[in-house]
Length: 218
Image 1 (cartoon, rainbow, N blue to C red):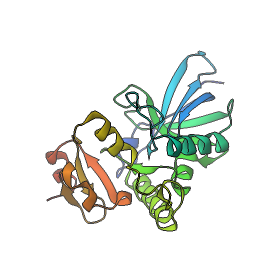
Image 2: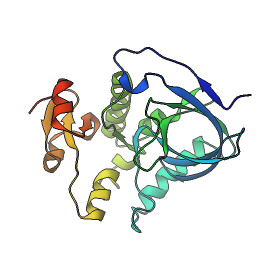
Image 3: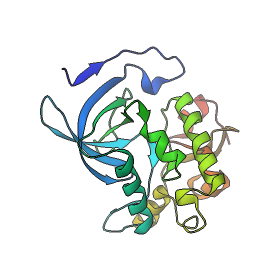
Image 4: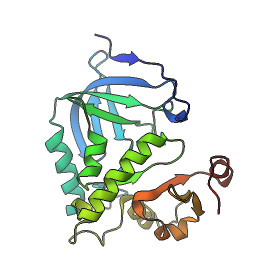
């Protein structure tokens, strides 16, 4: 069976998923709650895959760890995604992140595991434009419900811990470089004002021009 199954999609509201493809592989290891290693059944090449739209606590970022909370998220993903599982990874048009890892939606036994991680409160919504609007809305709804129910990283025990993308900024000692936007009211904010926007309504833009073109403003 071919490892790469190409399906060309015409989704006018979703530039990120245009000309998407599906990658099939077997799970070799799970690094943390949003990063796994797979192997292509055809080429036997190992590939890193990051869960699109989900950001979980860091096991190891520049030698720093979020500790117990990161291990909790990793172990939950291990629970719902056993090693050696064969999975499908739905990739957007640009299917890699800045670290050249595959970036996509993981489907196992017909279940969207990215969404499951958010439903369980094991990670936060994390979208940098371009994104699929329907996917953003579904993931934000799941994250809001988990937050309001006090699940996972939003529980009383862990809710004072910084979200993973804020932890990375603190570790580097640098502010975020992306603009923060409220997906619901279309308002833009600087990275310093990120806390104004509820975490389950945040999306990010690399420039003011791109944000304004897509209906966001200060």
